[in-house]
Length: 238
Image (cartoon, rainbow, N blue to C red; front, top):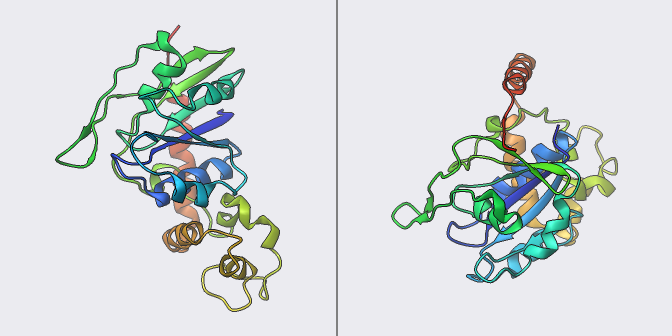
């Protein structure tokens, strides 16, 4: 029942994974949820590469710093009047960001483990908070990304999770084009022409290879799991 999913990634500490970001975006897109990208810790590292990848794909993208508050006020209106959730790797600063946006939440925060290079889990469960006429959920972070964590996709659906592919779908030489290696693929041609990021097509191909052999019974099992998970609900804080 989410309206928006805030996909949070730090620009460093821990290092961003474009594959994780792209998997999360695709999961939102294919579920009809509006993804919003948020990159944190911008005071610690250059953001040029990330802006080059995500600045032109048609998804709203924010660059913020908890240290000096840069970009936080720009993000705040996104919470108004909707049901949203913040998700991302452990240690990227989801709870810290929510505390800046809504100080009365007073969420627990943690630091990135210097030994392991990844964040420690500070959020242990999904909790729903009333904010700006809507609700926002802080979710537990994850340290590894598996496509089964979100959703099993049909390979035929996957291109719809990459909105910048849309102008080129249906323009390929072969109607059965997978957009991974075929000659005459309009999507791959757009990559070569610099119209689609190489990073994004690499993520798409990695995801396609993960889901290309998924069977219908696996999709049915996933739907049953989603139903049970939805029935369990989330904790609300008032």
